[in-house]
Length: 372
Ligand SMILES: *Cc1c(COP(=O)(O)O)cnc(C)c1O
Image 1 (spheres, rainbow, N blue to C red):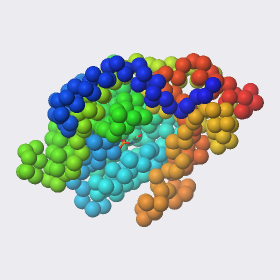
Image 2 (image 1 turned 90 degrees about the horizontal axis):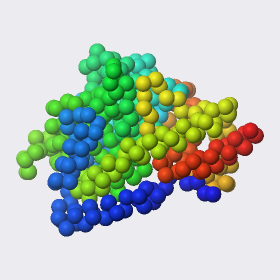
Image 3 (image 1 turned 90 degrees about the vertical axis):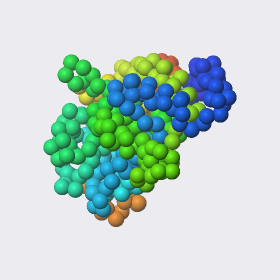
């Protein structure tokens, strides 16, 4: 029995009959960029996340880049982000003209905390990017007051966390509806994935939303009139139409991921050589990845691969030690929790269509590797 890390075909098989007419509709309309499908998706995502506005764009990377550009940095202005995240978070900060400042993570949730941000805060800090890594929200109720005290903007990196929620009072609030800005990716492997690249920005702040809407079309709402220098970062109508179909299934797929996670916990909880993902009180985790920490990680990964089981290492190198940022002076030992996570994380198959038998097979092979 083969167990791939991800199987997008299994998902497409379920929705083929809904997708095909929608593709035909867009092709027949010959309206390919922005337009009614994108506006429809923007309204539906804003309603889903719980923000007044959403603005479609070309990728998750651009969903970070455009709001950062809207902050119009002076040289030396800083943005704080975790050292343990996908590269795009840092790339967007750099490309917008900010200096990235890397902070450490909580070893149990892989997310930033108020303390980890405070440790690197400076009077040049203009914004912070809490990344809701692997599908679990960072403790926003600690982060928002810290940012507010210093007048910094909070941009949530929600690329892996669409549908994730966190308790606030008697309520629960979705990822992307806490900070001024939420940045989402529709890359095919995300929980809501298109048939290509795509992204969306959610916004509580109207001024920033307006700037993002301009920046994605070369900096002006009116054609040939440019208030600022933006870029081309538009969402395709085809992607939007596909995503509108898939959004209707998202909560069911999320439940599938959560069920798989629950089964892994049942089978691996007492295996001392592994640490399973810890869910912070008040969080609903959506498991874009099910990432464990494992003793002899590389040997375990090989053992699984030899038995037809896929796994992934997200991420092998922390951002402060990436060659492209060497001029920032990052050094080994600087952010010990991020560095340690890079050495022992392993992501296991978690996609909704996985099924109990294949989860059990992964559990059995991990147990037998450690001699249980
Ligand atoms: C995927 C991802 C992005 C970038 O999204 P793209 O659509 O691939 O540009 C940014 N941040 C994180 C944490 C991601 O996982």
